[in-house]
Length: 391
Image 1: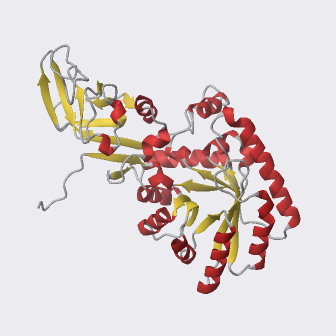
Image 2 (image 1 turned 30 degrees about the horizontal axis):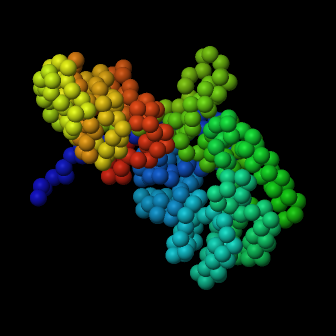
Image 3 (image 1 turned 60 degrees about the horizontal axis):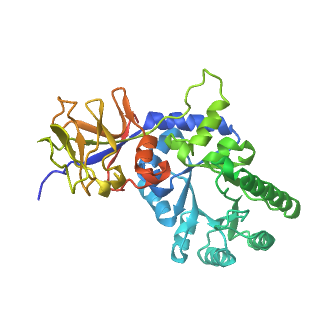
């Protein structure tokens, strides 16, 4: 057994200055009267929940959205500062009491869950904070319109046990113009429902929220009291289409408003010379046509470097791009550094991020591996260390 902690084969750097820049942009976009909820589901889109909560503390973020109870628990575990946490997805029966005890709000989509929350709240003497999610056309989860008055009636009848934290819905693809009519239909329906609620019931929810990153950018009228922002805060537009549309509304002097906060790095493990006519790596997918220098890098598909990047991925070494050659292994890739003669074992390798004046962006990495930004980021394993810079 070693006495010291072994160095990781790769690490992820998260830039606090870039994050604060993105938060400032979001707050300017939504204005002072709309609350910002930082969505940190999927291990904070691969950036690390504990990392993003630390960054959020320094940026003045106080509300967070997670998908499930285990993510809410992770947030409590990594920070003692009071936070408003909303579970937007899965909450099992045996996790309900923990949510109530820790004043975590959660989405309700069934009468059974609302009854359970009311009964348990009466038992432990602590109100359940519930968001009623309305089915407006996503057809995933949500309360049917014909059921809504019954749900509100239950909440109104049990004010000591049920706190109406929110009325919400989720749009089905606001990042694409192809979904415009569907999203517009959802919004019109939600607005009609909201009008009915305000007219019929004296009690109103503490917050109305419908907008994700894409809707917040494209449909300002969906902001209401709170926006649930995920991908934007990490420095990415929800889609290329949204980015082009937004930039087209700005004048020529307007700079790109977001900054990438993530970099993924490793180090050269070894350098090997390969003769003309020799195969590199597993199988026969790459044959050297001339003498080559190959750098081995201790990152593979087990670390989130997709096997589809075999013979086409790129990394940065010595400030230059180097092509991945041969098959991506479980724990290793090999890169052609023939044209970078100064490269040595131990040199820094950038898998995603900037080195000198060169950059491997998440979008270019994603295009090579046929993944979207969301998928690529959330597939980065939890056990890769996340290191905060510029805090």
